[in-house]
Image (cartoon, rainbow, N blue to C red; front, side):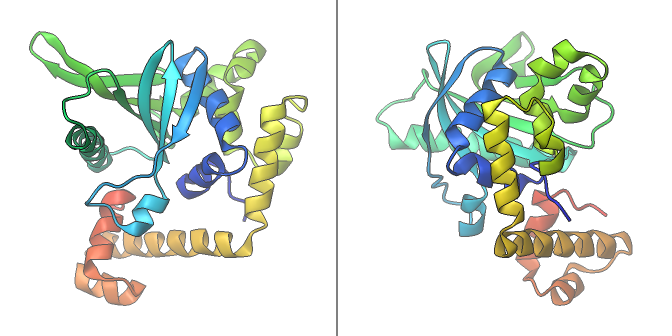
Length: 254
């Protein structure tokens, strides 16, 4: 099986490796529709996160139109559980920044960007959500942008101009073979293709992804038949807490 950057773990690994800065700048410039400069990758030190979660987090500081934004990115599905988890993480990021400084940082913005797959109901390419009160937006200091990947494909269908504009979104769910003929002169896509090929050739990395997917599928199937968490933990060789965390993290409602 060939994995694409639709897989969250693979996406974050590509973004964190050799050409990650260039690839992210191209991708984020497409999403913001203006030039984005990646300033630094931020090590995540949120107290409630496990070591394995930290390794799977993509957290970067960027400059957009002379504004500094702390961006956290995910490639995932969408559900009410995922929305709540994402908001919780975003609030922790913002809170963590406040506790480190002497005062409240109102200059740095905090933004979570989710590349949403398998969501057919999207009416637009992107949805931007901020906290609101009865009078409108309560604060723009932090928010969530959902980018609907199937919508991008729909927009680009038989539209070469849009296909070129959104090419860095489209490349994320392409195999190395498909990328070979996809804007073949584009240096960013060439580097991205090389990273996808390299990671798919890394047997240890692919085995970890495969094992994770197998356990997640097993949990989902067992939930469908109302299997107790304790039994699922035994069947998947996980602790009960790890099973509960996977149900929340990967939206495994069954």
